[in-house]
Length: 216
Image (cartoon, rainbow, N blue to C red; front, side, top):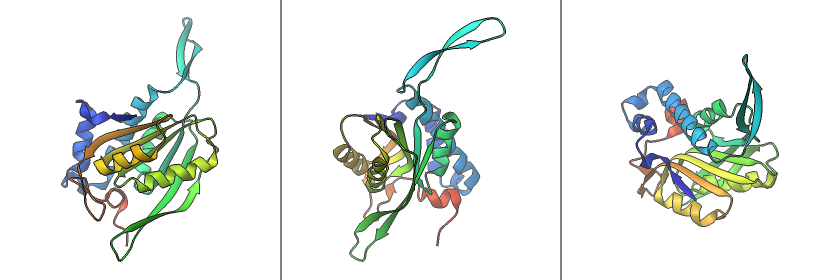
């Protein structure tokens, strides 16, 4: 199942416009803050799909019955570009356990790419809701490798894949490769073009560099 959040008018699209804007991108603090705010919007939308239970809360005047989360999801992200987006989720799911994966993409002389996992740290996800967030999905390879790595830590009850921008090729790859049941893909916007160097067009550039500075 795919949920495209940017297809209806909301404040999300204002933040999406700003992270794409080459002039605004020069302010790395604002860029990170916008990724974080988008993460909060995604967290709120995904929260509508989670399980709740009634809890009695004592006020100064009586007892209120309020639905609260049955279980906080496990939050996972891909280093390093995913960190500000992940922080937006953590702002809302402030009691969640977290997982971090370093997925490395290597370019070869023949123009092809290969993916490997260099580092992964995660709590058990067995029987839990898992949210995997990353700023962008190009070919989908990083997300799929991360998904497979995390599933070595247990069998989640449901997996939510969240990305701000994705290529059409990447979305189709996720749809083809991920299970049809118990996986929901959440996307802000979809860009049609993906270059041979795996850049989305119009895209926004290298999110990691824009957030944290150029790597050498």
